[in-house]
Length: 143
Image (cartoon, rainbow, N blue to C red; front, side, top):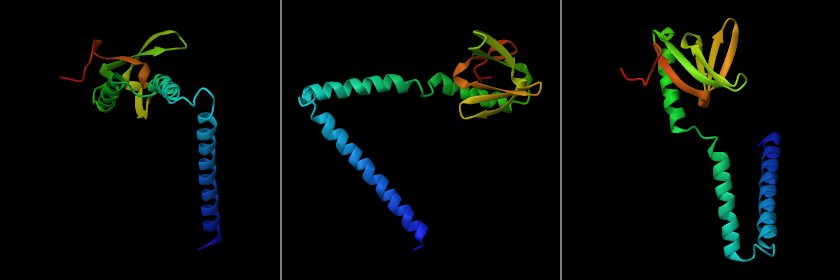
């Protein structure tokens, strides 16, 4: 085995040992606090932490409406007459709803729309899209 591979495994092993020692310190350190020695109090604190993290990180997940918007936006992007479509989205800088033609839609990357208009690109988070219009009427993707 080459020397650089041995070093890589040694550094990886050291990283694993660091994680284990950190976890042992958290486990023993927090578990031995006077209030958390009672299992019911420890359970309640753990559930409270789960609830707070679920509320905080649940907002990062795409909502079902965002997923349906995403599939509709892919349909619009690939539509042969996408100039008939408009996208309504919330603009936080202007603090209002903005209507933009879908003819400027050039791509969708992960959770962003990419629009190119007059030489500059605009990135819009998909969660800000409120409505997709076809000939100025709400469009659901069905014919």
